[in-house]
Image (cartoon, rainbow, N blue to C red; front, top):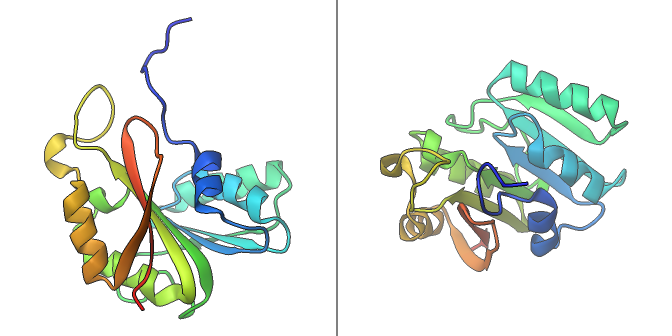
Length: 183
């Protein structure tokens, strides 16, 4: 059978594994959408961990709740948020081990506010994973002019107080980095 869109797409399990997200971790999924990452993260962190699925759209959060219920996952908490506002996640300062920001910065005007919020809620030893669309265009993804170039993302995360620790394999259409708070 021929693939409709050839190539490897985002694989949440692979990304969580590459980031070494451990059982018991507290995870914030910024712009969770229908829970593509949240569901896989909830399985990975287990009942001793927790995933905060954050999105601006109530309909997206409803899907996450339904999927979690169907899969009997009790460690996901959905929160309606506006991440383009200061303290927009509604989470406490230094309260999570991981923040996942996937395919969402390019859609937002206040990228610096979103990155600052990730920095604020991460524990001192916490890390964030940022995944964005690669520069090349093709049959999938947003228009080239709104994609964030890797060097541009590097400047953004550094300005927000992060250091890039590692690049991750985010498939054929995306790139990803693991960042930590600067010492």
